Image (cartoon, helix red, strand yellow):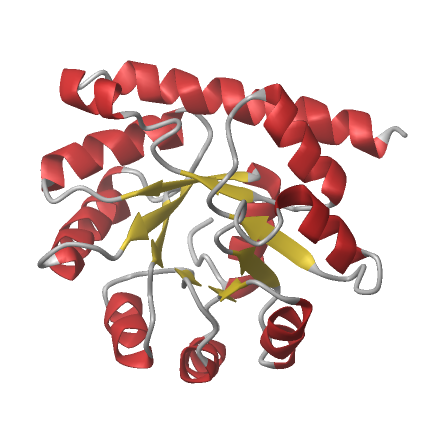
Length: 228
């Protein structure tokens, strides 16, 4: 996937289904974690825009993967305004995620052909996001706005909606089955798979295995649901 155009990125997110959500101030740690995620089958990465000089870290990491592993698709999360979105797009972000809906961010991303997934917590917000051209809607915080029951309630009258919750999604079969049964197309998972213990031990193989197992589990759940 050399060009990583909008449609290709959206397809990759849906096929991957489990999106790593991660930030670390150390460039080397970021590179090792992201490579571990990619090796485990999670090539679409949501780099969280948090901490001082996060954009500079993102730029260096994105430059690294452009040469070392071009199959990695770097996106950015926690984007609240258009200037920040524009900066990260200039630095190589192929998708943008935010904790809330911002019309200026949506217009900027549409102009540049970049997928934008805003955080929404009601049917009205989701509808507004869709009017602005958002294909995959982030439900945030996933557990606080109603969890899988909220997704089911939205999917009833709005079955065309593609939802990606972050917050409240555990990598257990019970949690994943409830969310995907409700109708989500993907989910963001951070510290439940990229754990503090694994990071402190620099156990990147452990992170890789976590994503490999979780993606395999989600694929099995999706296959079973499709067979119903």
